[in-house]
Image 1 (spheres, rainbow, N blue to C red):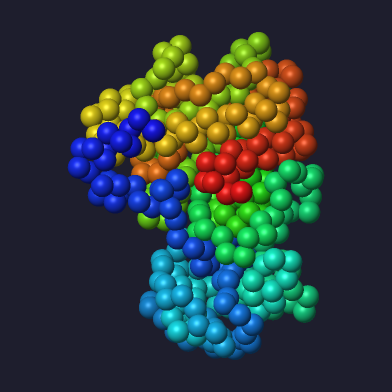
Image 2: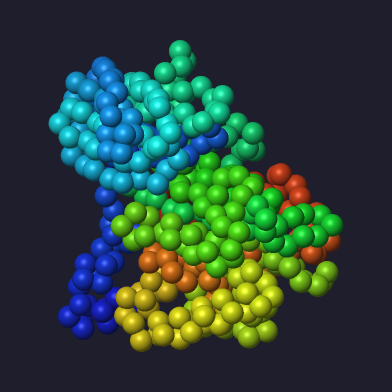
Length: 393
């Protein structure tokens, strides 16, 4: 990328014109709000410029959806954004008022002020309970932290950020397979179970550092029973105007002797002998072969496009960061960073990678992947790689 940027600039093309101005290494907006999807509720956290009280009222918005109107004693940065988080359709901030339009079928939300403490500013915390949730909302008698790591996770070197105002950074985590598609199945593990557990742990670590996380799935489900539609829906979650990176997590399959971790970014295959991995992750069988051929054709066409080359260069950098951390924190065999035609990372317009965190078919790695402690180590490594790429200290 260091060689690519001077070429782009000398050609008379600006970074803004290429759509790169919002990419993570070239600057980002402030976080207002931080948004996280939890089990049972969605939370929005707005940093405030000073102490405030809060009053709330509900109104009816577009399409008959309920709107939570929050009035503060301090002004907020004027901003408006459409969201795709569970339970929340959009938010508008202007003057001393923040309005949260709830998603269809959601009828309530709550708000409270968390005073400045431990290096954190005053914060407005809005919780939107989801249907059937039994979780405590922000209106509970005892406030909960604005961003919390799951208490079930072992200690990790990733500590909550003490920065008063963090950049607005957002990533998509795609837990591979799910629902009707189990992925790799061995005597030790089922791929869809490992990828979901690891992804949820990565989410906790990233949110502890103020990074917003969009989950492709947060339970054992699929986005579509049609494999092509499923992969398309996952990849559409990443748009350059909303997120900074896309990470798809998978478990590898092979002979009982095959082992190690490898991370991919999109492009022409570096090793034709590994093409079976792309075919398998693209759906296996005839559908996997068809989608891999289509993705390969896309990869070939990208070679002449400057914007696409820039995206691939950033993707390669993200892949190297994640792979380095995975190997360093697990001691697994290093199968390296490679490129191949994975359908799910074909379409994102942001840096996108797919990581194979080990071979579930290997007796040693399969047994490790079944252990919560090892999955947490993988999650910590992936999160560390992402944070290094995003320049989050």
